[in-house]
Length: 226
Image (cartoon, rainbow, N blue to C red; front, side, top):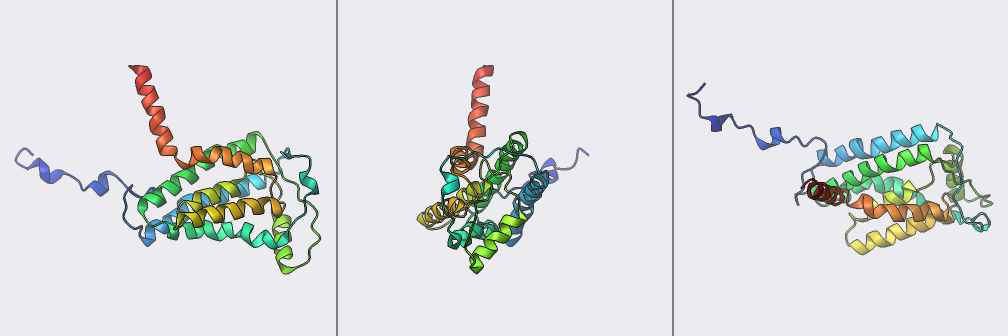
């Protein structure tokens, strides 16, 4: 149809570049639908993979220091440890821009791809230490200990989650304080060993900026092919 102006055949940019997986990389405030998509595309896959891994009942190795089994358990720190489950959902609403939400989603996806194969190839565990406390807080912690096996411990996904989420806190120092508290509670509740935490702290920087790393890898390949 030569008589038709080809400019009128251009499709809107939104149809050419679908945004149903990731929010755009801009400073616009996320819509409610975009925030809900984070629950579906980021949190739901983690839940599925974690439940699948937990039910494999893989015999794992405990990565620990010799003194850790003698450490006391402070049950009163359990609410801080368990707050991450609420914070993971709330993170979609804590994100002020679509760029923040996009970065958070990519970090979660990258960690799923990297960490869960580690759980399957190199199974790990963090056996629960004895706990004598009988308060309601201790009972809630005991319920979690009884419900979920001490597997998939190294590296700690709990630590990765709180590091990712801390970046969307404003002011930023609040995120740092919250992350430090949750990381410490991983030990004080007896849910993780210290090496589990250290491993997460080592790989977290790589997972926090996956797009930048990918761009760096592409540049290296381009230089290599010249």
